[in-house]
Image (cartoon, rainbow over all chains, first blue to last red; front, side):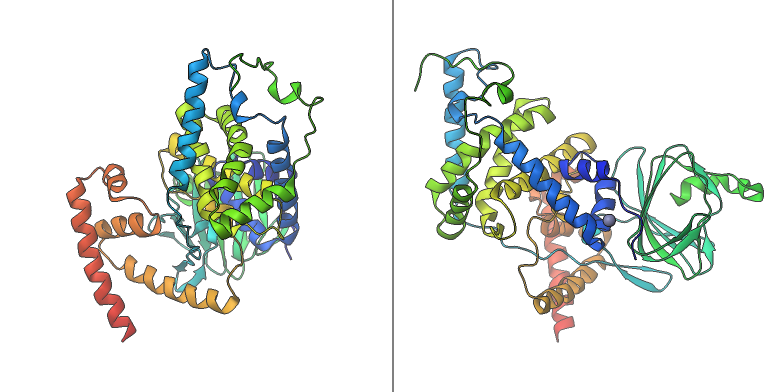
Length: 232
Length: 208
Ligand SMILES: [Zn+2]
């Protein structure tokens, strides 16, 4: 059972297309598995669409009269749109629907089917430390890093905190931390104030997004700090 | 044509709200979309264009700094409407919702191209614009096919993979690829040729 969902405001930004790709992907993955959020997203999309297109009817002839200084420029704009219409309709060809690629990944001999949102994103080579494997997604979003993180049965991420945020979406399996158990489909967004120590009894695969290297906080684990940037 | 320029107040969106009935004629919009889908009707498309294009342009103008980019959003969105109208299903939602989705996706991909310099066009994977129009069984078979294809592609040398994936999976043109990978066009062409030859052999072998 999915217990952790994106906040309403986050779903709203998702629908508006305002989130960075990494977070939009996280929500898309969650919504794939969560009918509640699917429903909210559908409703929000309908509302924002209605709102976008109901605004006072601006006719083609009125377009941008404030930004046009002369009548001839406005006429140019009209011509421009007319030629756009004929360009677009020049060919009668329609697009053929291609099924989204279903892509599989293998971590430590176990095969997982990736969600559609991840089907075309380049994956870096998996790097392994102990029971952890991480493969970076090539999204090129500067300080925001997205990865697939695999934890072998019995493994865990040492207690750590973030200066930024940390998103985990469980693609498969489950893990626990001091707050409870998380299962497939759960969408867990933590800010920098929270320290946790996830352990996975039976192993799991997560989609993770973080905007800062994690920082280990406990005893001997502090020695691990150089690998903080490795994991997330 | 009116020579005297209609002076629209700056707050366009609010100014007209009391003088015009803003209810959108959803039935009419759906009908036009269906005519575009079924009959490739240019007249219906022109109606859709006149309804949506100015609004799309205004929305895009608020997200992009320059006019060329907002034109690109209009061009891309409306050309997707023309080419993908058959994916619209009036039973699943309003025409406005569907066109909004197309516009939002185009905008997202273009913003990503501007900001991160990535032309990976992820939007349709993140927000699908067509859903479940094929039966379960076909889906399953398709998956097997593309899985197999992807495995074969991934067995190619890295340099050829890039070109094949860009060309076939991301539908980039050879020129775009040359630009993107910073390679001469001739190199792209020869890599593609080599890769195709290998794919044919591989796929042929797997089918036998
Ligand atoms: Zn949910």
